[in-house]
Image (cartoon, rainbow, N blue to C red):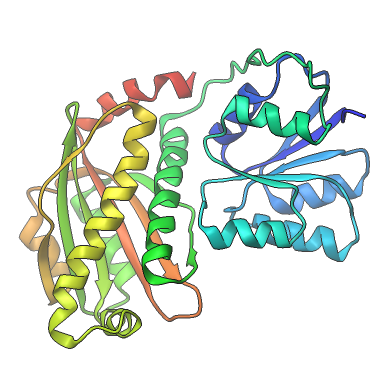
Length: 327
């Protein structure tokens, strides 16, 4: 029998909106939404939910923890995970934890329809027509979810290269003056010496610089993980930076309909303080739309920060590119 009561759990308003639009328009089901894993568990415990759509990367209680909690409480209901974390290991884990299926963000309406029909969660003849969703969303929230998808693409590539599972954060999106950027970077540095690799990008008038920051203690750990000799460290950092930055920008570009051209990566400072890095680049980073992504490698004491620093002039162009998602 087709299900008639559905719960969507995702901390992104845009992701929930995109999923609502992708659900079959002819599906006569009551659909509820929550933005946190704990809320999802509480609502499911109350009874009546027949299908859960679940995100993985959430702050309070992530999707993996939700699946584990459902299993521990012996709550049996079909769960479809829809996530930007497309690492092979992430897919394996959610299926091992009992999820019915895994779909990548942004969800494809036709693929979703076929999945629901194949598991008899909807009538196969249910109309695919798009549902309406007229709630406008703010730029910062929309752009954070667009970045989230790009971040996931980059992590999947990195995981394959290094043979590890990459733990994904919630990306931070803020407009920052150069002084605020310096304070944010100093907080991330925790007083340590850093090595930073910078790579410029531009596409359809949208421009900026990507900055990949490595803590020096972790550069050595990364080199050991990749079984590299000391003299190969800089080459490794440049290659790793190019891979991560290209994958993340590509994931963003695909969603906003642009193609980014990228410059050659260059080392901004080697074993330098944040103050020195900021001093060298103060004019370029006067005011910026800053996106911060902090990656870490499971089972290793290694993390590094990817910053996407869009020029102030790019914000209006990005807003226009994202208007179809915001409205």
